[in-house]
Image (cartoon, rainbow, N blue to C red; front, side):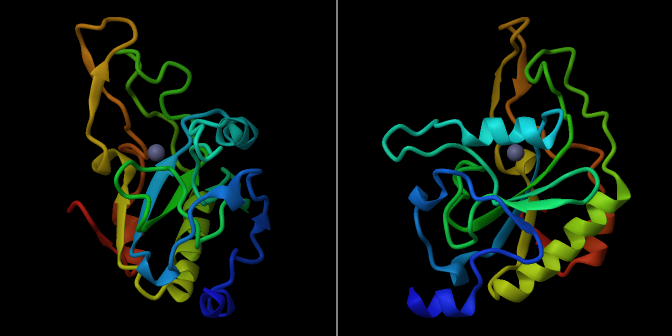
Length: 196
Ligand SMILES: [Zn+2]
């Protein structure tokens, strides 16, 4: 692991480093095993609120919570919350092999699972996407095995009862949603979609 520490910086500069209080308790991994970027949106109003959610402890045994590695605000400001060589809990079944990138965007907030509130209507600002593209290329240089990219919504297709009507089913995860510019991102990055 000492070798990997020397080869792979733990965080990306000049991104602001703001590691979560429990980040050092997240499982260590070999950076060269990371082959997937998962795109999320926070489905929250702002970065500060996302931080409050990210800091919450959900996994009692390890004293850790759910979060991405990197957060990009609407104006492109970027923060690193978890080191790249730690496993963050952001996408069930894919955490071990992936980097989670969270874009600040309201999504379905605040009625995430309400049956008539399933639209994702906030556009992604151009600067936010430009920063994302630069970030992906930076990750490509730091993580040589990186090859795939996918949206959270395509990696977790579970449906759950709607909060307003348990007889109706809604997707548990919809991020980053239909307004995420997949065509531009795929044309500008060297990664391929995992789910196709
Ligand atoms: Zn997500």
